[in-house]
Image 1: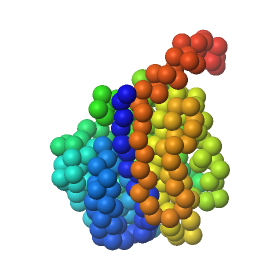
Image 2: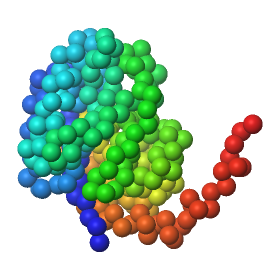
Image 3: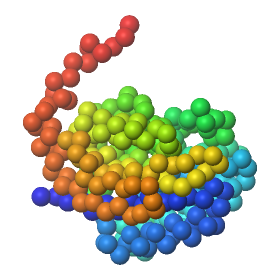
Length: 264
């Protein structure tokens, strides 16, 4: 039996208070480290919040500092750190970027959020990403998406076809769409036969209340652990053998008939 211990940090991110958020992130990561997890996960845009009006200023000042500190923490604690996402500036433009660091503090993957939430004008503040990424944890292939990406099953099916066993979703998902958040995660887990590990924010940003309910869902669609709406560290152990069990009992990838899905 192969097991992976995950600590999900559901954080109350303060809008535009980058130093406060950095200190809180460090405090919570150290706290999570006391449970000896293999993997620690952070929420979306934990450095700036989602997102202050003077975003580019906050992202310029805090982005590289945030990445550097996550690398140091991963090495110090000997964990894989799925660093949520960080608002950061590259070539004068702001990106919503997730990075993953291995137990030695080395960056192993970078993902810029592809789907930007146009109803909230995210696309007017950030530049969309253009690459789909995967990475490995203890020999298990993983995918990484951010928040609104969850609504696009084509992206996550592509990751599943590429062989991922688990999907990490840092987010700042708001009310009143809690039911969508919970339902879409279960659907993505069931249809792709993968673990879904989500890390949402809580608290307020502008007039938005973030709905929390970070969760760990297995490939059967069963919720192993789920937070409520307070700042908390969610701990879960994944039996990674379940992926193979589910796929052998319900072989959807073998039984796919792709030729019928194409639109002329």
